[in-house]
Length: 84
Image 1 (spheres, rainbow, N blue to C red):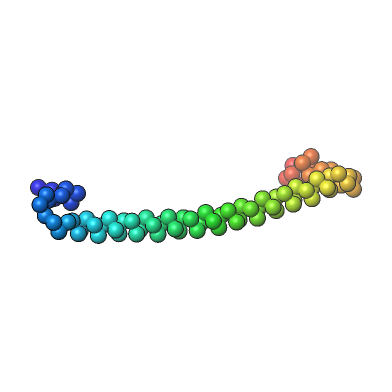
Image 2: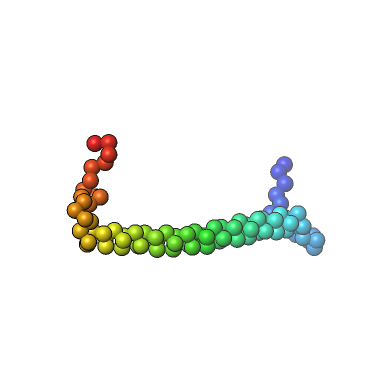
């Protein structure tokens, strides 16, 4: 017969200390995992903000280059790859 750790024993005032300990361990594990994931998300937010600034800077720089006429060269988007 399987032992059901979730069922209360009725008149037993001691409680289910094994079940309580197991739940406390699960809560501690989940709390740690959530904290670690929160740290990862915070780091990614900083990295994404940096990458967005870099892309904006590169886009601006390229737009400036194209506006200045690029000294007679063919725009990069119109150039064939070197293997063609």
